[in-house]
Length: 115
Ligand SMILES: [Zn+2]
Image 1: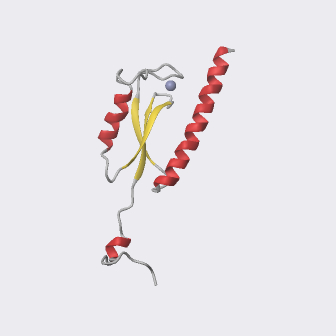
Image 2: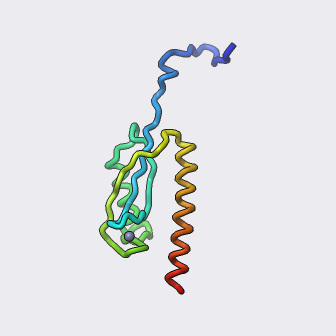
Image 3: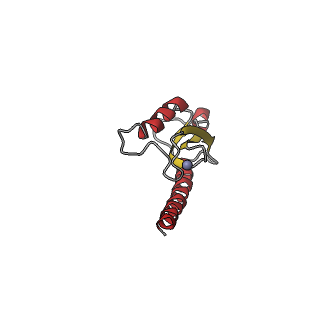
């Protein structure tokens, strides 16, 4: 017999709980180099709010330069794209792997520019 919390009846609505709709917003230069990114649930967060948070990162108050560190462009814009999963745990793991690869690329480019 499945366990249930005493006094709480399982309803059909419980099995239809809202699933997150996970998106990724990236602050990009025209060459699509990512300056920063933010994953969010589009069911609970307005994309315009995410835009404002990302643009605040480069507004001069956060210590982040308002230009692309790779190509120097100051023409930054926000793009939104649907993540491959709506599972936060899976999305977090994928984003951490991408972040590690991008950091390795950044370090390699930094090494190359010094040679
Ligand atoms: Zn760039």
